[in-house]
Amino acid sequence: GAGVSQSPSNKVTEKGKDVELRCDPISGHTALYWYRQSLGQGLEFLIYFQGNSAPDKSGLPSDRFSAERTGGSVSTLTIQRTQQEDSAVYLCASSRGDQETQYFGPGTRLLVL
Amino acid sequence: DQQVKQNSPSLSVQEGRISILNCDYTNSMFDYFLWYKKYPAEGPTFLISISSIKDKNEDGRFTVFLNKSAKHLSLHIVPSQPGDSAVYFCAASRPGDGNEKLTFGTGTRLTIIP
Image 1 (tube, one colour):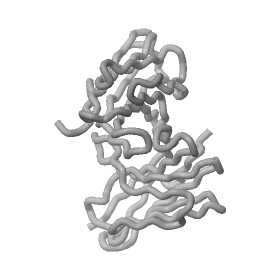
Image 2: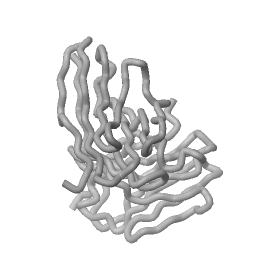
Image 3: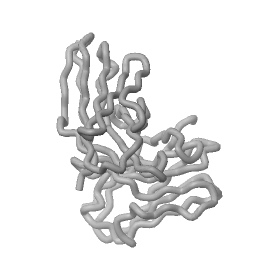
């Protein structure tokens, strides 16, 4: 497909379990972003990858959150020892480069019980 | 601390009329502003943007106005169409962040009444 894809679309997990969320950016896009939207909140920046540069992790809320981007393409956001406050929609976006329009995926809705 | 605020969670407008969505920000360092539109079960899509050196940017039926002294921007849609029904997010970024680190508002759900 031509757009950003994310999987799974929905994830229900128990408190304390680890989860992995996947993002497939648009082919050729060098920049990739993760955001989350908690209930009643705006989208919150989490992490940004640009090419081979070190990622900007300044938005990650705790050390339980980490993200990788393999081969400059697919990215995985991992949340360890999930907590109920991690419940949110996690959105991935990609762009052609710095200061280019971000194209968003449909998101993964995470529910931690 | 919500640096970008959309105080109206919802708005209903008659088809053909003007829709005005408002956004306020608190961080005077923001210099670039964007509007995104989101349909259910889809990610947000970019709509229109404005740099702080301008006070107006127009693209077809969509116009964004920026009032830097009031730290306020608005999105005008005219005429409103049923397909405009969606959630609209205002976003902002600071110098040096470019388009990377966007700070989003909580969104306004716009409903166009046929």
